[in-house]
Image: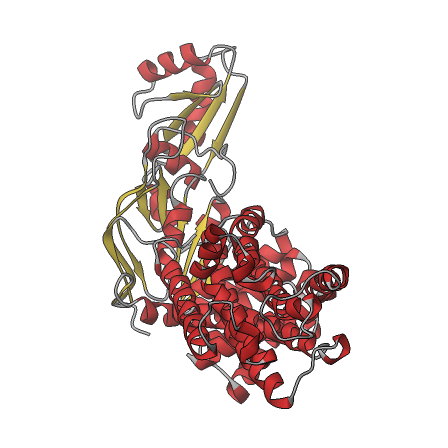
Length: 322
Length: 258
């Protein structure tokens, strides 16, 4: 699989919701996004809820049309060649898309028929999918009787039945226990190894960390893009967090006595980004006796990248699927 | 095109037969209605200008079958709203399936169920004193198929546009049931006041009911009703069916995708 070609090319993607919301001015859900998803990679859209991920997912899934801008998937235009795109695209929704009245096998047969598969070909694929996802014994069970983790497996088996070149997942880790998350990660990695491009939305930092490339979305704009490690490197060194009785005063004095990137006060703690922070810690303790209660030194996280780029914490206060 | 239609059609049937309450509800309600109304009124009502011996029981029979179809069509289309809410529909919408196949699969599925219920009901005709020949039974089954598709497509159109089952019930009460009441199923066109009979003549379903009645009882059944013969009635019913299908198709092609 040639990794030169982009699996997805988005240019100037805009989308606004009709002005129904009473609170606050209407803001675009997506304010002109440009991005390329390299083929054969695991690519993530990380952002707080309400950041535009769900809207972007719906556009990429061919469920919503952008107000303006274009998306090409393996060269096919989403607006004019939806049928081509849909053949190459597997979609795993956050909300279930299984028919709970039907058995696991019946759901897969239905899916196969929708994608033009039938007969022995379909039977073979279903048998392989059931085997791969450990669902063989659940074959004839109605999906309403399955646990959440098992249902998610059926969803993924269903989305992969027609061998899509790109798998699109909306918040795939949400609602999964740690074991199921590990299974999911292994599945995604084996898909990448088989040349499938994986595109997912998430608001979990850990999930973002495991992507090859990442777009940080906030308020409908891209605030950062790159490999997670590279994004974190732009934070100069480590992140030091100090707590004490007077964080504002401490931050002011820090800025004058230890020149460098400006300290920030957030939720009662002072936060600075420095290289070789472990050396700094000893000097800080000497410089401000009695003014520091606790010091933590940490490698920068994607949360720090988000904070660095937007000046706001990666908070998650809006209700899900907002 | 055929495979997706087939699989969507089969799913409607599978779901129906896995929910016995749906079967019971769709057949029992009109059956009761027919028995109670028909036997209560049969002594005091004669079809003006109709053939001798056709009492209200007999008059009401075709209308009741249409009511069975209407109920079945309404119930099966609730699944359109459920599919949307439960998330099943999104999986179909992202598949490389045309909206035409989606509409045809859902409508044919619902129409098959409606038709089956209508045919079961038709089989009760001899028990209730309605004489059927093999030819009239076959012809009636054909008309039922046409009406089943028409009513299911009409229900689909409303169900696609609506967000809630409650809203769909409102449409049922305000549009679908009055449409049935004013179709000549309940009382004949020529006995009604002028404004009402004008409404009934404007109601396309009237011609479907008239065609069914004529197929069951012969041309005499619509004599003096001022309605056209069976050929014209069937033609009008077929046009209504096509209009309903086209409206459903147009609805799914519109901007609404969520």
